Image 1 (cartoon, rainbow, N blue to C red):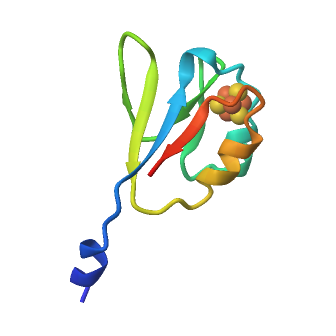
Image 2 (spheres, rainbow, N blue to C red):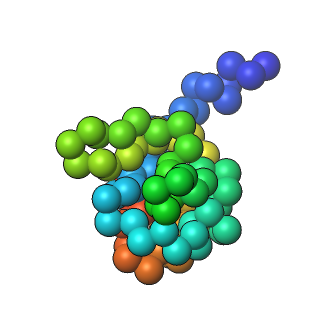
Amino acid sequence: MAESESNQKTTMKIIHEKAKCIGCGSCVSLCPKYFEMIEAGKAHLKGSQEDSKTEVETLEISDLGCAPEAVEVCPVQIIKIKE
Ligand code: SF4
């Protein structure tokens, strides 16, 4: 039964430019499903892959969930969604 669900897989990505994060915590408040604060005073995109050079975190998602809210709330506009 779950087969049809997985067939509808869309590849979207959340991108978080962690190096530019000012640690305001807004994304974590609005979207704890995808974001959490880490010790460095920055937000972390949960379960993401991080580019070690650029510190850009990328997470593939099939469900946008609260991600658009995080995009909107970020004061430095470093959260993006690629569809
Ligand atoms: S809203 Fe933007 S600046 Fe604030 S913690 Fe999240 S990613 Fe960092």
